[in-house]
Image 1 (cartoon, helix red, strand yellow):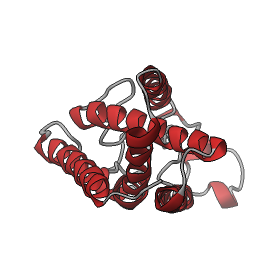
Image 2: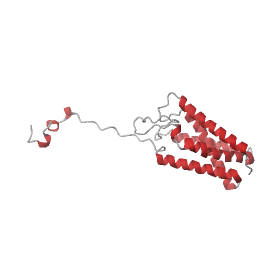
Image 3: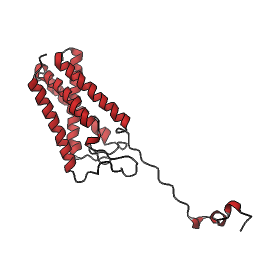
Image 4: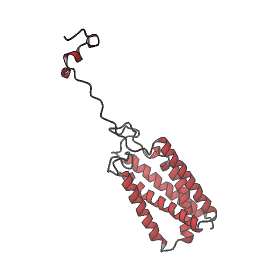
Length: 210
């Protein structure tokens, strides 16, 4: 498979443009909780776009390289019959990601700022996630079938390794931890409701009933 600098540069530029647009949507959202503010009812921090390994280095480098490999594959091997399959994969990955992030145990972040709620950046990232995962799946299938070869093959593999590394770092950093609601704080005992002996200052060396 012949490598094309034009495909590589365009794929990277489009990928980085979408990343920049997501960041802009986050910064323009006036209802977005502040970065690293405490999520109500927890001790967990509210994370923004720039806090995630996968959304920064993972998308910029990993997904960018995977997109280069994918568009080489699409340009050289895809026909009209394969695009519907790609579109179906995009939709399936979007549904899977939305169900996961809209669940009750998902820790709120800039894409899904509250349980069952999705922001503008979340909507764009949902589509971006579906396309990226479908591109990655297409590359894996093409590697197995021998349709992805040469320099694009190694670029795609490098992108996959880079993204997996960022995914591991997310897990180790706790960014992907589920929502952890704190137990209700202990209530201080009310002296009025105590018996005389419980409220007495001499109760530890009590000589007997008052």
